[in-house]
Image 1: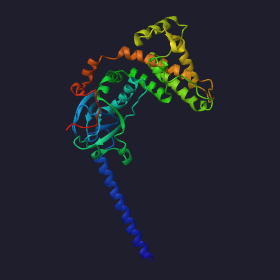
Image 2: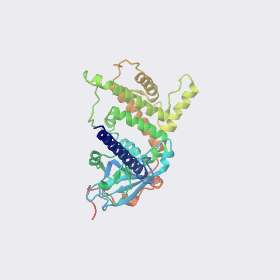
Image 3: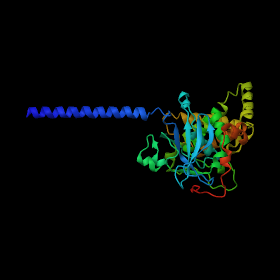
Image 4: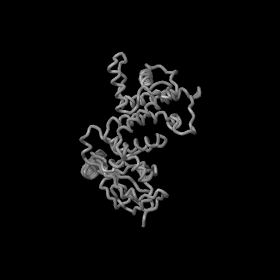
Length: 362
C-alpha cells in the first residue's frame, strides 16, 4: 500500500513539474511576443474608444487614412468594418515613455470637445491597444491588450460626430497640447463640472430662453450634495489659480496693481468690471472665491451646512469666464493650426454636412 502511495506521489510530483514548465514557457512566450511595456514596437496603435465618425466622406472598408499629427501621436481614421461608423486610431511613438507627463490626444480631444459644447455634452475616451495592428483586418480580428469578451462587445460604443466637428475644435486641441497652463485650467474645470453640473448657457444668460433655472436642493437632498458643492468650488478655484495665480496681499499696493494688469494681459478681462453673476467686481469676487475655497477645502471634519448650490454655480461661472478669456487670448487661427497639426484638409472637405450615414462607399 505504501509502495502505491509512493508511486502516486511521484506521478503527482512529475505532473506539477510539467505544469510548472508549461506555465514558464507560456509566460516567456507572452513576454517575448506580447510585451506589456506599451507602447512598443509590436503594440503602438491604440483604438480610441468613445468616439466614431459618420461616413458621409465616402470611406471604403479597411481605409486607413492620416488625419492629423499631434506631437508623439499620429491620428488616423479607420473604416474597420463594412457599413459601420469609422473609428479613430492613434499611432504612438515610444518617446512618450521618456516624458514625465504625457498629454495623450484622447484626453485632449475629450477636454476640447466638452469645452466647445459648454460641457453640456462630453465624451469618455479610452485607449484600447492593439498588438500587431493590421488595418486590413476587422476590429474583431485585432489582438487587443487587456480586453475581455464583455469589453469587445462595447468597443464600438461612443459618440457619433463628423470629421468637421473634430476640425472645428482643432484650435483648442492645439492650444491644450502647446500650453500647460490651458491644459491644467481646463482639466480642473472639467473635473468641477463632472462633480457638479450647471448649465453655463443658462447661468451666464447666453440664450434668452432658460431651460435650466437655478435652484437650491430640497431639504432631503442637501446631505447628498454638499460634498459635491465643496469639490466643485475647489476645482473651479484651481482652474482660476492655474490661469491667474493666487490673490496678492492688497496692502502691497504695487503688487496689487501689477496683478490687475496681469488680468488684462493674460485673460483680457478688466478686473474692475462687474462680474454680473456675483453682483460685484471680478477682482472682489476673486478674493471671495479663494476665501470660499479655503472654507470648502478645510472643513476640519464638520459638515458645512452653510455651503449653498449658488456658491458652487457662481464659482463655476467665474472660472468659465476667465477660461474663455484665456482661450480667446492664446488660441491660434484655424489656418495656422491646420499647418501645425498637419490636418488632412482634403479628407475634411469630403464631408457632406447635409447627411449622416454609417454606410461605407462601394
